[in-house]
Length: 300
Image (cartoon, rainbow, N blue to C red):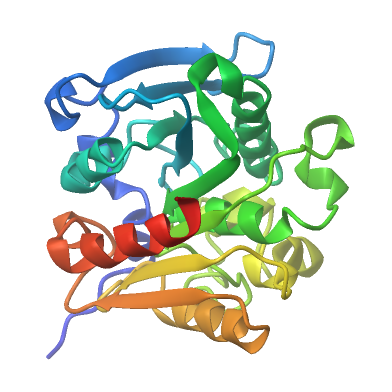
């Protein structure tokens, strides 16, 4: 008889990778010559969750394209170092190719429910945009990469960037940055069909994010769903999904890709055979080669 994991075990795997991610990453994961700038405040306050790190590539040039790293953790755990532990080869490839990598923190849902997370992410990216000259960043070339909950936030930022959803912005002020490319690793795209959205448990990550179940908060769930903002002017998407993901049902990525195709937005969907929700299977040559090719096509 096939055994089924309890629902909360499945849901909590959304953020179970915190154990390899909370500590400052081993500097060995970065190429020799990488300059590391840590704990830069981006919101004119002293909140630890309002800081970011910047990793400058070893190759020196007058202007660098930017990749913003948004961590996973079910919107309620981990920090700006999360997901780096199993994506080391991809990180090295980004930096060796001359990209600046900026990793950002944002407030947890357990202390500030949605839309606090996307407000923080928008604010962090806008800080980098406004201070691009200080870091020799080309502010016209901004890619977002996110994992799980971070994939959701990256997708939501990328798709809502050409709209004006006032609640997504600190003080209701729309940022000036534009998103060039989104790299979405197994991020939820539609809360109405996301696995576990009907759980009555008050500690369910979706319930904690929205302040209620999807059934109780249908309008907020729609507002928080990236697919709600899809239009023909959206940036290109590279979408990566594990075939055996037990936390974010693969249909989430398939739906996102299909809806982008309908409005003729360039996108590529990679289903990693046998892959679970996260891990080293996403850091292989199989994924990385196409990822870099897609990224370079639009960023260089």
